[in-house]
Length: 236
Image (cartoon, rainbow, N blue to C red; front, side):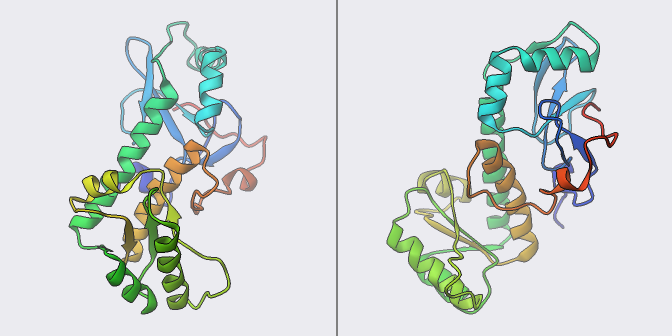
């Protein structure tokens, strides 16, 4: 039985980004936890006790807000305390945490038998309509990725649409280490629920990095659903 973390709950409540004021599903935002000593640190899985603030901006925007002192000022007002200490390179710590969460999830799905590797196996599964999500390492060849994408389009009856796998910002060595396999260049998820879980973590990571190829999350339009005057918490 797969365990569901707070960030994988499809019915997660809406929260407001403390920096942008925009609204998003709690599962897609990043929580900053306030420690007893006033230290504010990333809480990627939203499990830390105590009070926390939510952010929905990307790495660059967060880093700028921290460097200019904007983030610290907003947190002091929100938490009603002057005792705020932000860790160095907060954005970098979040990005590394999201990357690890994605790779760890991919490793779990591999051990559960929910994915396949190898060009021939992936192409065969793709053409037979078994593949739910296709991923490519950053150093995968254009030709190899193109062939895997084409096989997937055939199986999905999506020829001519340009549909293809997601190119990851990690190379084959990182993928191989996460999966416990050798030379993992292309990865195909063949279980829909597993693909959903991986897509969730991948989307959070790529969105925070500001990547244009981030997969869409089911709650990505929350800011359009809720008006600017809706009373939605940024702190909890």
